[in-house]
Image (cartoon, rainbow, N blue to C red; front, side, top):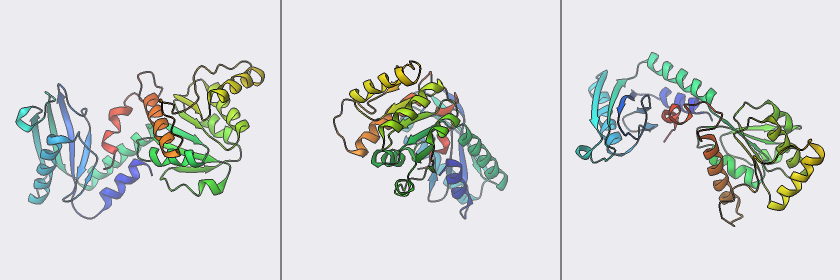
Length: 284
């Protein structure tokens, strides 16, 4: 489920909602200007950085809702006065949300969803499903692809699932800056999909499950079948990280760390505001 849909469900529930938005940040702060979260009498959606700052702001927002007030402004130093040591200062706009405010927040969330980088998990076996379970909690567009409906049906993750007879077409049609994780049930198909991802030349991450031996075999295969396609940008084995643990959930955790690092690096080809622009969409 995309973050905009989660936000819609939150805002559509009965009862008043307050918006907390960082309108100005000076010095060091946990989050950037524009970061927003939403508060009800008993529930929260998103975060403006946690800690004592957020605790104070949430209490102020709930007081605003209880009193029936429309807005409030806070100017908070992030120092010993509130038990934080960031050293900066933030200003927060607290607003009791109207219908038009909610519609504007949803439009912004939908726009941010459209700009999120995509992760394509090519193979819905044990590791693929474990990856989908992790990625569903991250601000990404995650697509789980397989040729086998029965494998896709075993995934309970709230991600897009695609049954595809020719998954290389999915690779070819992906947006620039996407990440591709190849772990199908067939080595030949792995080679085909991995070469398609590498040939794009604009992927943020291309990883193929397997060993150093499999990587060497793939390199030889590309020399024969792909006009000497370079494998320099290929991650294989994936999720190495020094761990020898072969459990799917552990492999998935290591791979997820690799992928999110690639997507948030300074040279990644995704929307430049990815890190901060989607911060207010991360549901708690």
